[in-house]
Image 1: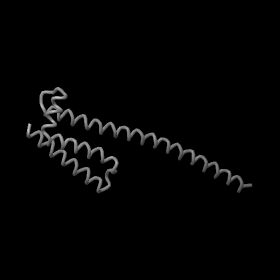
Image 2: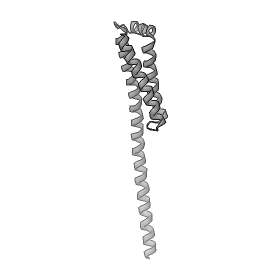
Image 3: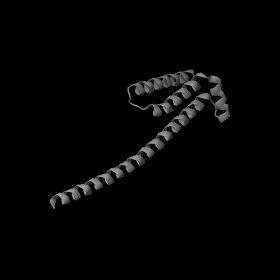
Image 4: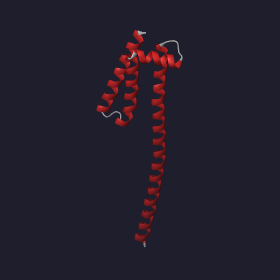
Length: 122
């Protein structure tokens, strides 16, 4: 079990480093990095605080702490992925609305152009 906890600790630290590096290089926006940082910190906390992990395993009714840790890790990342699905859906809706507004503006510009050509042709 110690090996699994050490692997999760290393994974958490690598994830934190990767997210911070991505924020610094502007590859990810700060508001999106918060979810990943919180997920990595939760995993780091659980992998280092064995008493809490054993208490959670007992509360969940699972046989061992490694299984509880993997279940919680999966749950944490499902929450992060769900949050990003909501953000992507909102962005898609915004893109559609923006494309419609651009199409309306193009239509108005074309009609104004036709009117000015008609006036200039008279």
